[in-house]
Length: 269
Image (tube, rainbow, N blue to C red; front, side, top):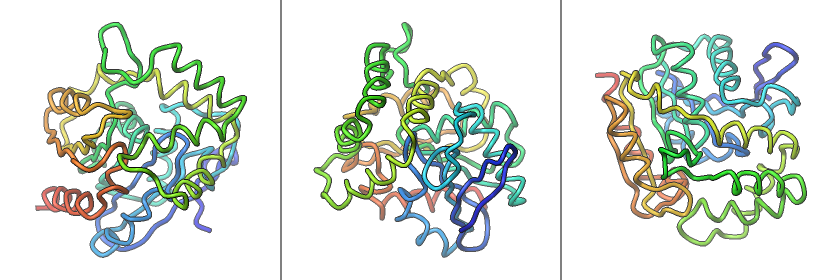
């Protein structure tokens, strides 16, 4: 099993296929690299396609500490150094977008060619000056309490909200299997941190090309979030996926893969 060892006995599981310019897929909160199963077979034909499980998630170490977005960004830095990856394109879905922005904030853009941001807000929290946020305090604390009392029940309600169409039982089953690998203590800790991260102050300092991919269906994240990012990030373009909600890479994989591939080609001209 491919593993990168970080400090303090933290092991990160990853998949690494293909050759060429590296593209790293970074999953959302509670999710795992398995959610990119429709991307790696496509991108391995032209690129070095990598997906990893963040600490505490999937098949990575379920250590009880270090569960902040800022620390996940440090893990990503160490991961890239261990694999000696250069001129990387980072693809971040949901919380994965926060990990990317925090990485750029901490370490700069020198080793990153471009970023792909999939269905995320500049902040998930409804700040007084940010009404499009996903969570207010009662909603966030309610979810954290539900995780502690009935993690599986919460996920059975949450996962279908990520999709425009009804989810087949087989898909719900494997997604539940993946998302319940996290102990509830980790699940609630990272939910809180990622929900109150506010990346707005440094979005306008990002100069590398950014592709924004948003689903039209707004069960979780509004298209207005993508429009806001497109205004704030200087070199950004927005693609809206009409038949998707929170997971265009699973809901419209063929189009998603083509759009991202075209973006990657533009980075290497």
